[in-house]
Length: 274
Image (cartoon, rainbow, N blue to C red):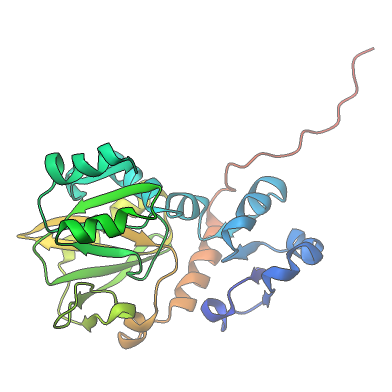
């Protein structure tokens, strides 16, 4: 099994893996055509690899496309598990919609997000009209969500077809975010087995095979905020889990036991009937 990776950090110990810089993409097309899998390409590369070069990529196309921004993500999650998505409104940024949100949909506080961001960046707790006006200044789309009464949430990691682990992330004093990159604290209290089973099911429904899912537990009912295609590995390391090995084992299994993905193939040349 021959592999090419565009992310050496996540594939450093994988056998038979050639690491390529994204800036050299077009100079390496011959190599890319020869290998079995392309790992962690950048978003702008995936359509070329999948539809033009007809290559198998990891993470999956669904992971890339549905995880590209919070609008696509929320719409997909709502379609498959509406009762598990916090109340969310996605509207164009007009004066009328700004007023609708604070008069018809939510009272303060609520959460407002930037459509494309990760690691807790671009997520704001809106507690008053001044903060709301500041959020609205430079946004094309208003993405707002109810603020759930939590001080911690779960990060559940899916690699391949399995939810391989989960851990809690807690707010620290004076902070709203639970993201480790924003000062959140990792807690290794036991994550409910039902949460792991449910996220594994959800990931399979959406064909997502590499993501960190952010989940809240409200009296035994699970709410999903979002998932991240690229997630921090600190929680995995603290649990002694080798993410690289799990990825490689999944790719090996898919190569030997799964059918080729349903991707377009070039039509064969056919002679016209005389």
